[in-house]
Amino acid sequence: MGRLVLILVASISLRAQDPVEIIRRSVDRDFNSFERLRNYTYQQREENREIDPAGKVKKTAIETREILILGGRPYGRVIARDDKPLSEKDVRKEQEKMDRAQAERESESAADKAKREKARAEGRKYLEELPDAYLFRLAGEETVSGKPAWVIEADPNPEFRPKDVRSRILTKVRGKVWIEKSEYQWVKAEAEVLDTLSFGMALLRLAPGGSLKFEQTRVNDEVWLPAHMTIRADARVAYVKKVRAEIEISYRDYKKFQAESRIVP
Figure 1 (cartoon, rainbow, N blue to C red):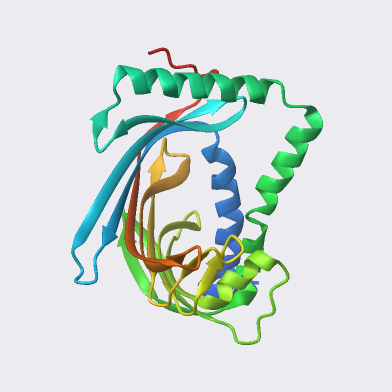
Figure 2 (cartoon, one colour):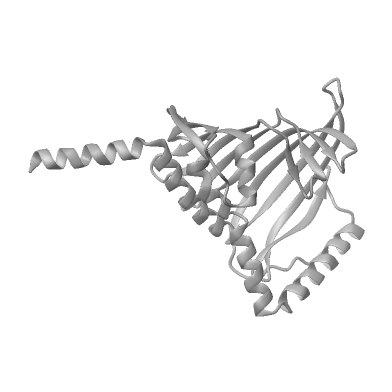
C-alpha cells in the first residue's frame, strides 16, 4: 500500500513538472483571470515613443485613462495627457462621450449583448491552442514578486496547424513565461517576433525582431491582473509609413467594482 502511494505521488509530481501540462493548466487559469478583470476599475497609463533611425526618441505621447464599468463592461475615460490633468473643456468632452456611450449601452438589445459577449470570448479562444503550438522546455525556477515560479521557454512547433485564423500569430513568435507554482498563473512573459506579423487587412505590419514584455500582479489576494507591458517594434502602417516605436503601458489603482460608475466634472 505504501509503495502504491509513493508511485502515485511520484506520478503527480512528474505530471506537475511537465511544461505542456503546466501551460495547459495556466491557460485555464488565465481565462478565469480575464473574466475577473471586468470586476475591477483601474487606471491605465500608455506612453508611445517614436524612435528615429539613430535610436533616439523623436516624439512622445502619453495618455492616462480611468477604466470604469459602464453598462456592464469596461469603458476608458481619458483623465490626463502627457501626465497633466485635462482642461475643463476636455473634461466636459470626455463626460459627454461617456454619457453617449452609457446611453448606447443601456439601449443595447439582448441579442446584441449576447453577440458581443460571444465575440469577447472567441477573441481569446485561440489561446486554447497554445499547448500544441509550441515546443516547451522547463528552463528552471525563479522568484517573481515574492512567489516561486516555473520558467518555461517556448519555440514554435513546426508541425502545428492552426485551427483559428488568430492562431497563426503563434507560429511567428518565440516566447518565455514565468508561471507561479501554487496557482499556475502567468506572472511574467516575454515574446519575440520571428516573422512579419500583419494586422487589419495587413494595414499594420510588424517586422521580425519586435518584442513584448508583460507582468502581472496579485490583487486583493484573489486574482492576478496586468501590471506592466512594454512593446518594441518596427512597423509599417498602411503599406507606406515606416515607424520604429516603443509602447509602455502600466496599470494601477485596482478597485473592485461595486456599483454603476458615473464621473461628474
